[in-house]
Length: 292
Image 1 (tube, rainbow, N blue to C red):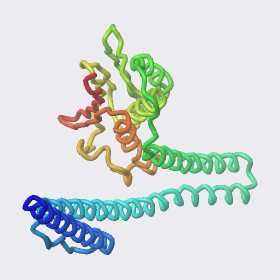
Image 2: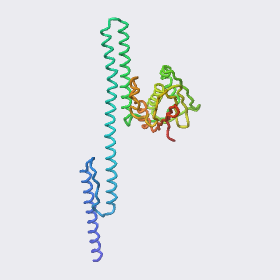
Image 3: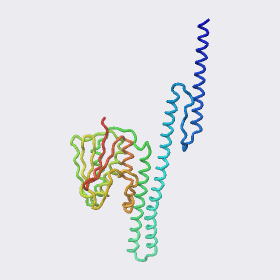
Image 4: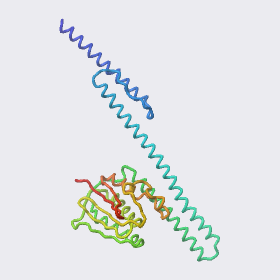
């Protein structure tokens, strides 16, 4: 008889505890459902049941983290919109120039002057096309799927192909290329097409903004690019991967300042660390693969 009474009491206590947890969980669920992303409300502990206080603290921490992420995303979207407004202005500038030269060509009777006007118009359209191409490439690199399946890639061979294709650009800017990769080669995990775009952007950046000789070397699992800076250039190595960095000074030649920002996005997708520094008139960019 006593055992039955004890069981009944224990059962009642257990039901009370279960009911208490059910009420608390329902209250917390309603709080989450009604909570606004902009609210500063915190979860209050209404029960002394074990674990309830810890659960409320965890919910507060997650809510604060989510709110911080939302604020950061909103700020980033605003910055991106401002950057696009500036870029749209830089696109309209060569477009207006091209239209002006086409109009002059239509009004010009001298065939030689007509050809000159049309050549100037084509140059401005090429600059506008370059800006749009860089914006498209950057937008693609934002996609989490921008780097596909990785496999071992012969980095040295891929780099040699890129250097061969860009050598005319170096010649046009009066720069040279010096490569000192190790004889045993350099095979690293990467998406070959994404890595090609990374190398092309790094090399083109050196040709368009650097001076002297682009020196390329290998240190273990790192690929290093170093070139001189043009006289008067002040480069912030910590910001070169930022979107539109130094764009105002370079867009006139068809550069949107998105090349290295695209490099950073693609490297992140492949697990490659991209770093840069500018010291004593030398700009150095390093691509480092993680240990296997």
